[in-house]
Length: 274
Image 1 (spheres, rainbow, N blue to C red):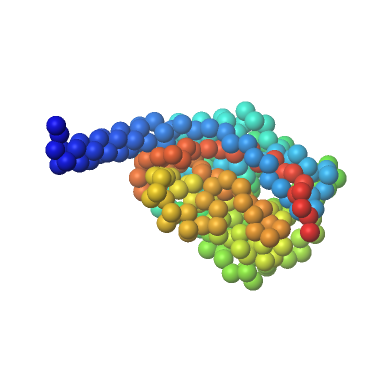
Image 2 (image 1 turned 120 degrees about the vertical axis):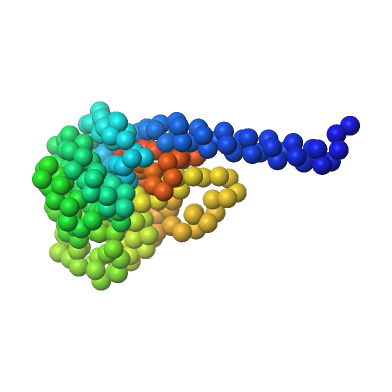
């Protein structure tokens, strides 16, 4: 008969082996298993003409030694295959502002096309000069605490893009001031949902969280508490939000229970307009 000590040692070794196997899979395979997530984002008072508008959303590319160009190209190809009406890039194109990858990632993203344009915002890993210049040089519009108005089927759609560091309600209100049409707030950090709801913005599209990147049941409560929505759809008052898990990784080249994604976000009319 096995002793209690032997049983405990066996359980510990089995647990260690399982953890090693899971981590190895997360490093070697899971972080490269890029897929397409399709979601319907409810928008309060959405005009009928904008219902069904499809937005291709890619965020947190983090092109680096850990995130190869093949992953970025795959993400671009997946978006193009979906033929969205417009494309939004959610920031963090490189890691830690590494200039080595600024032009290469901008070149990879330059292949994106959509009938109503390609728009980008900046994340906390993007510098304020080189990254936006590289994107603009390749025909990608950068919304850096600014807003643009699109005319789609006779209706206006305002895209308001803010920097990661733009956080105070009065700063965001300044970007939104003068908007007269349906407005989408493009904010790298989903914590801006609080300010968006206070300002009656109908919808927000975000990234930043990587969906948690490494989600281990029972050990992921801390990261979930940091954000109002870690991944997927959420809402606060009359404001809805979609948070993408993103494409790349940062700090560690691993994803566990949190596959990378690009998203097709389809606008829909809110079921409960106030």
